[in-house]
Length: 271
Image (cartoon, rainbow, N blue to C red; front, top):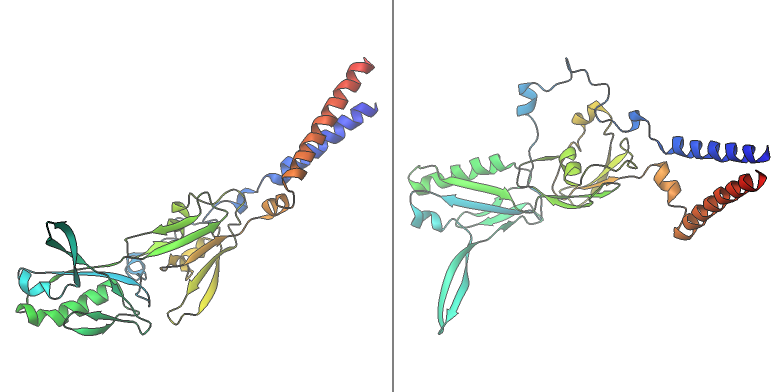
């Protein structure tokens, strides 16, 4: 009789542990309570989505191309690079350099001098350069390619592949960053994800977002900025498990095996 009670007790404990480790669907699903008839972005909202804006310490690639290559060459930041040195004959290949946005939000552009780019989007800087360079090319609009070469975010915490991730696009959503990190693990707190952001003046702030909430698209952290850090906090199950080290886990496993063997032997000897 006592053996049956022990077996039932052990079975009850196992059931409780299994149930406690299962996360409710409401804590896992993204975009909850979404009404597909009304919860959508119209075309005007899409056109107003904020693009990445230049910040101090950004590295910007700017390439100017026209039908007048000799004239446009002076507007590209080029540094000669020695690629061959055979018999003291030096052959140089031009290397395009990136522009560093200084702490005042400026870049040093060839011929034009200092340009204030902080707070501007890629398109706004493109229009500014086209306006300033039009007269140099007989009012021919130059083809200008602009990219932020150091646009990256860090995704850490309870994700499958934490790390630093780069993009060449004008924007990256928090779900883009999470997808690059392989999504959250089952232990990640989806309702309390933190984004660490550095402002243009060097100050930092935390923004908390709830991935379960459909209104996350209105959060200032929905579109990540360059050098953002996304931190996914562990839930209670992971926190509780961290209290046990390898020795404790091995001891619990060994004790469970001994209890099972003892119960089996007791039943065999009893019969």
